[in-house]
Length: 155
Ligand SMILES: [Zn+2]
Image (tube, rainbow, N blue to C red):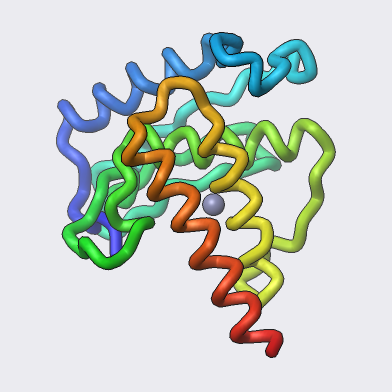
């Protein structure tokens, strides 16, 4: 489980800086052609972030990523998702937004079919050029965990 305690002003400011940086694009590695997303501007909504148990999520109808307490890592060292840094969490949400803009419309309701979309999104995020090597590993492990969950629920 990720952090559940409402974020401090400093933590929120840190996430705003990270988001501003991420909105600048990711053309360093050549792993992603930013031109495909020309004009994509996603605002970071921080209005809920101070609340305990608030959730970070991409809202496609409002064109925003809502920052929540769970943007920050938790303490469970056996769960790769719990260990992702706040940067990696925001890159994962950015990947949801990018995939939406690119035309992906995967099922993402909390049914079994939500797992493949989460797995793809974490793999997509794992190519971002500014990730720590540990975050890249956790994102791939997170994807693997979702694939395993999907197989278990379908099998
Ligand atoms: Zn996700």
